[in-house]
Length: 407
Image (spheres, rainbow, N blue to C red):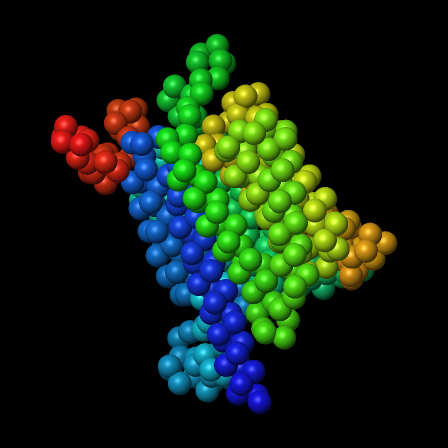
């Protein structure tokens, strides 16, 4: 029976890893559909190459930082024969699952910096974020390392609760992206000298919608499989994720006046926000969390683009940074027993923990991109940006036959 349980857990987490891995195609097509045609190849190459860099950074450094486990041992040991490694290679498949979460950090950032960022400096930033910065906070929250959870419990009566990563993954990625977006500056022609906003429409709404659909489907692996064992799988997590998703979608549709970009990203806003409390909220609390997230996304996206003149192409800071921050706080509200939640959370712990995660992301976003900007540069030249990242970096466009007049 023990072997059956162990094998079942391995398979369960492996399916979760595959679903979250598939979400990276969603990140890619969401960006492909949003950027202009001359930057579509760059979006595709950037996401998959970032994934490769993230895998190596997390395998050699990040997982050890977060959980104190190193894979520098024999195959016999790491597959279950050594101390600290679980049977049937469960530790290895857990690494795979958590690595797909870690790789979401550069995938999130990618959407904010689209159309004007250099390629290789971004890969370097991804390695640092996934190897060091993200695992630091991941270890504090999920690895119970560095005394963070003990401190939160002593101070506020409960540990910081983030079941599937509203703050650990999404807020971290969104607040890291804020530094990159501000350091890069707006795309050429996005704003006139007098501050007038010049609209840059998405290149392909069907691709944008496809990206959102892929992300929505994979998200149920992201959330439900965060239990990391078959016995912990919960229908509550699935239904809460579903209701938060539709709440965010409908709220964004209403506030965003049926704009397809807001509609499809509104669903993601709800899913970002529900990650933290999906295992402790009542479905009605999840619905409210998603509705508020949808409003937050639309209102903050319009405000930073039109008022603050911050050119965050896919709106990753509003979507992941702010909705992720809200999700961490919402777990401390709708997770309370008085609101039909399961309890075991403290509002102050959720509030403080959420802002600590956002603060770490914001700080290191400015620090790392500031260093890269001063040393190797992070932005394409004016001419390269005009030509487009596809031809400038990858020497081919998304539609090469059209380039030669044969399309």
